[in-house]
Length: 418
Image (cartoon, rainbow, N blue to C red; front, side, top):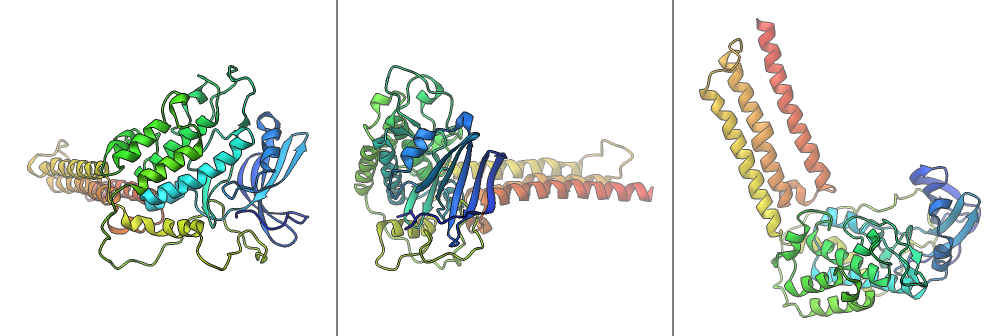
């Protein structure tokens, strides 16, 4: 389980601020007197939901973060909960790309168990997004319930406000109807689509990736579309029902032929959702590993680190890669025509003009096109780099400034010679 074996022992010592918006709106990493690590959330009164957090403190699902203490203060509430070590789903997909159907079904099943435990307490989470779920030592775990609320006793009363993560929030969260457990079923469907495609549901290319049978098998796509129906009554009745149907559909997929063995690089360290702390961890710490036979959760954690090597590049990424390469080459060719043209500025020598045109064509056209292709197809260093998106953006910015610098240098040399 994700929960600590015993409750935290005062006093608590702040270690690091994970998020700080104001004096009474923060998430802190703290340790107790035995050097075990916990997370403390400070929630201001306007958005604090004391009833929800008190209900969470009475749950014991391994798919929900263990809440140890909920304290009401004049300014809001203070919550003390376990620290779960591992990447969020967002970090996992960013580093490894789309996941296999089997691993996706396993993670969705674990998240559904946490959602079901909330629903048993009358709680609707309303924000089951990729940033609020960590893949820890015991599997997927919901780590935050910031906008969760108790289900309204009157189903005709629409008190839902615009809350949630774009792409994962159900239509009723935009004020069209009352939220219910099927609101979380909608988010689970979006999460399944996100894990299978590697594309955020808020992206304009998400639907194209979801419709590609080479990326998402048709049987899985149909289940995801049903879970994400506009009308809550058309969705599966519960989170567990959707997870079970998804697992059955995955089990019925034809077995893939094993890929030939290939030499692999040393495994990369996975980014964690919460920064590691320096204090020594006691043997009773929640992060202490358990020795014994591998559990399904442990298998999930291990599969997370190896799933990327089995993934094929989606068709939509191949198309974008081709477009980027052709566009970059075309721009470079266009700039290269300057070799045969006279300078627009008669005071600039033809040699300087041609050199500047070639620099612009190479560093703003051809090179960015090739780098974008490598990024989209996960080639070269992009297959192993920790943050491929940031690396790609940094390289494009660097190429732009190199081109500007070369043009400026050649222009300055010409001015000096004059």
